[in-house]
Amino acid sequence: MSQARPIENLWGILVQKVYERGWQASTPQKSISRIQSQLKKIDSNFLQNLMGIVKTKLRSKADSGLLATYKK
Image (cartoon, rainbow, N blue to C red; front, side, top):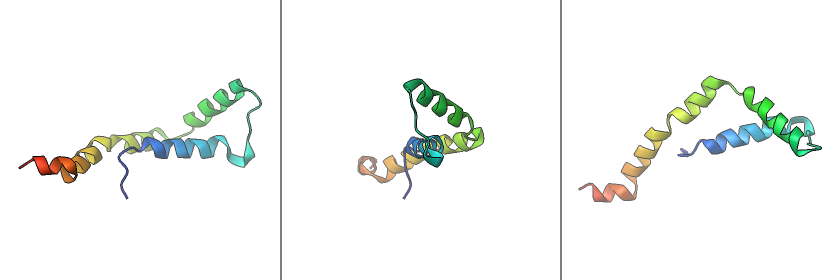
């Protein structure tokens, strides 16, 4: 199934990286620091590819969904 919002995939990957090996934050600041450091480790090409196809996927869904009935 194709997703129109790959940001959900990014959040899933980030959560896995932040909490790997059972990591737990002792303070809110440590949590913020951990999130920032793990986000920097995600490959920028991966992020660009993940987000780059959103417009195409949304157009495809719009063309084949409810809006397709109004294009006659």
